[in-house]
View (tube, rainbow, N blue to C red):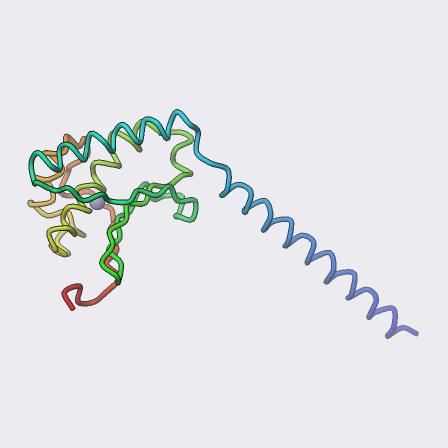
Length: 166
Ligand SMILES: [Zn+2]
């Protein structure tokens, strides 16, 4: 009799835990799927257009770098540039950071990351200052970036390969 009650108790606990888990998952899911405010999207597109013009003007680059708004990034990160195994270059901007500092994200973080993307485009995978080399700085400045400090304490590039030339 006692064992049966215990069994029932555990069943209820497991059930409640499952419900809670599904609820948390759903909450997270619906948050990540709600799009960024239209005015930010428009400002981003405008800035991207601007950067493309500068990249062409100074480096004759016609390529589009895909910019994604990520909700999966660590909250203390602003942006990140990745070079994938299939040789794609992605710029990720942290969605969580748009709430309190949208302008900073667009005017400051985006050109900074764009300069990393151009470095990858040139197949420059330097690890110096976590990718913030003199060459990166020059590119950043040409893109009219506001945060082109070489000694930024950020690890914001990811190269998904040990040897990207292979
Ligand atoms: Zn950086």
